[in-house]
Image (cartoon, rainbow, N blue to C red; front, side, top):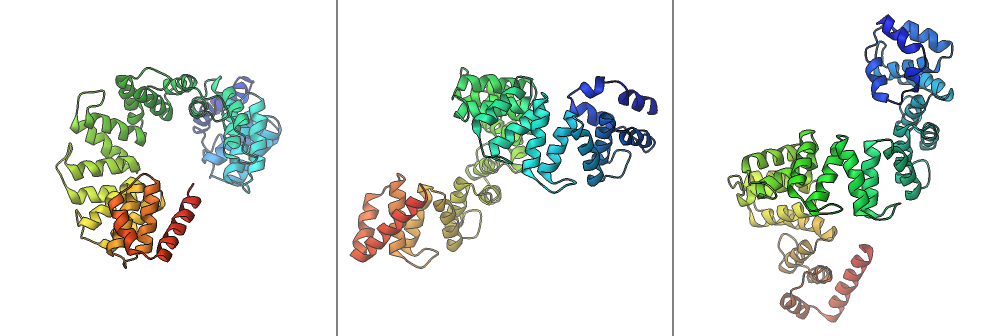
Length: 403
């Protein structure tokens, strides 16, 4: 170990590397016997040793973890121009690890490392501009730095640039460019890139529609634990989309995604138990899974839970709970929930009868495309002129606030 350590500290080959993973791997081998030598070199001002010592304190490799000491040595190395240390120092300022959190300082240290050509720092700097962290949000500047990193093969930067290309954020909108960058990220083995590239094939964006290719890339991402990929793969297998229908495998992947907390997976699995598609029908199990998605704010799931409470399906009937869940979905702009809420207010189901609110929600639902002229006429005829005016003003105010 001592010989290995001295080899690492001598010469310039390792210092010239921009591979943080290699540095972490080497420092992770440190024992308590290795630290004094690194400490002496660090105290003599060796930036590489300072970087490694800072990393050791950060990781707890050969020493007790100490964020303050990690910051001290990483700062010394960064100020001497060590680009890996500069990037790590930026991360420390961004997270508040060993130092007071400071987005502006984080950005400046990322910039120093990025200007030396370190792709991870270029990605981090691009992310700062993308999020408006430490500087005003600037999509063009973000894209500039993502491009520099992606051209060096940085998979995360390529994937981000792919999404920016897909939606025209900071770069011209181009599905073909998105496909180019997603392919780079996917072929580098990045799960998010594999998932994004699969979706292009699934929908024929920037590449010819190819469901077999979509299955291929979704499988790769799913096997790496990407929950959204597990959900999509499970749905395609259950539905026989682009592949022979396989309920056993489909449900297995859907369950994996759902158990990781993916709301789409939870909702999809729940609906299959509700309808008996690929699994035995079980309303109680359906309710339990869909509820998990509803509690994350998924409007489609909120409507299902509301309907199940309303009907007493898979759960004890509770009309007030149904109103509560319909309200959550209605406030998100779901026209179906808005209409159902109008009916419940009109009939006094689970809530005191209120024709003004019923008419208000009916008008909002109608604006969103959910119309029932007969119900509207019946409801309107029960209202006074003043009540209709109040409902119309309430609807107009809601719509104005939810543009």
